[in-house]
Image 1: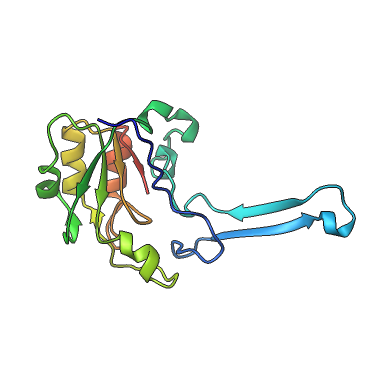
Image 2: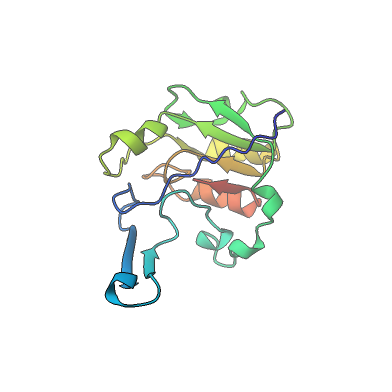
Length: 174
């Protein structure tokens, strides 16, 4: 195994793809050296679902913990990347392709192209983890799951996928 660090986060920018009803990202200059100030200062406005993000348990569980409860060691370390090819859903059949003992997994799907091909429009038909797949990950004691679009579960699906993972302290990032 290599100790190479690979940053897979999506850069934040004004015209990036956002979840419907998201405020997106905005930066506004409030002080400028060019206007006779001694500093440049800006404000940044965005919601927590902008670009690459992690859902805290509190997002879906009424008494869930906030982001400060997630140990940093869950978010770093060796990770297995599973290329899902042209699969339309990440279910237990896909999960069963993981080698035994994997604790951190990133799913590479056709979603990756949505960031570059979408012209900044949200795509409602993205590859996502279903309830069956979430249960399979919990059974395997996987504690970090990464996907390559704005949600781990399908847009039209119930919240079961989120709840199964969060109730079992499985962190997922997007």
